[in-house]
Image (tube, rainbow, N blue to C red; front, side, top):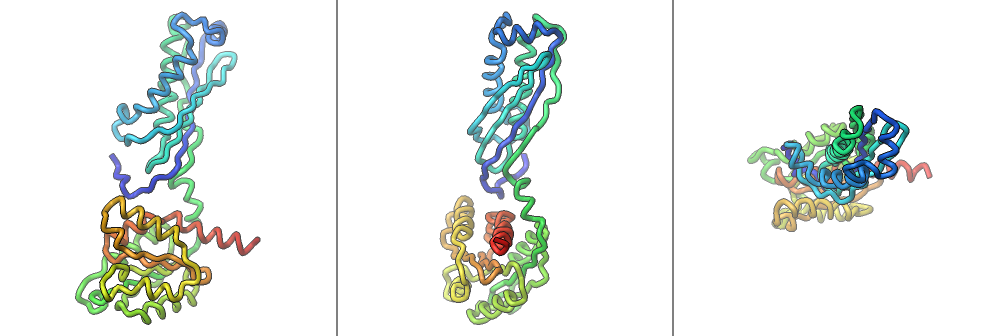
Length: 303
């Protein structure tokens, strides 16, 4: 199965359909009147669909087991066909499109099985996804922005040439994959005044994002949160909480990190961990959703 451990839980919804066509108008009447010999077709098929929704991962090899938290099965009964709709919701890391289509197909197969003794002309058509919401697709609108970022690595050892930076490069790569330009990538020592000066320099150069990596721990030289705290105009505690919550699910040491987030003017400033894993996970925790802040600020300016 595809690795989804880097993803965050979000509300995801999907609606799928299937169409059962009949060969005789009398079949539709039997469905409506509940006179099909095998029983109440719509209710029996509904129960089968509920089972199918919850057992999709047992049938489709690459589907992840996930919590199905809502399933609704409805019908539109026409003159010569029954259209089936299955709606499924979950709060999880991956979507429920396959679950909805699997359930719709089982509903249709159950109807076929119950109707075939009285109608040899039954067929199943148009099993398809009608609608999906949640996850990356809904957030793609936040990617359609021309944004610039400065990535600043805070490390005495890296700035002295004793170690190679990897965390800053990971951050830069992830930003570029989101369509954010990164014209600035620099390495500075863990000096409070230099951190403040670098941040304000790139704010004044109208960077949309200034992201620091390093100096968020608890050693005497870890001063990034203190430096940024003196110049941030507005803190964004939700971003900080999201980073720590995401990290805590992966390692208990995340509670020791002092990641910070806030605004200086219209520039978003982040202070992220200096470890490669911590920086990568912090980015996964809040991007691309964080980019929505720029649309929020743009809307506020136009109000």
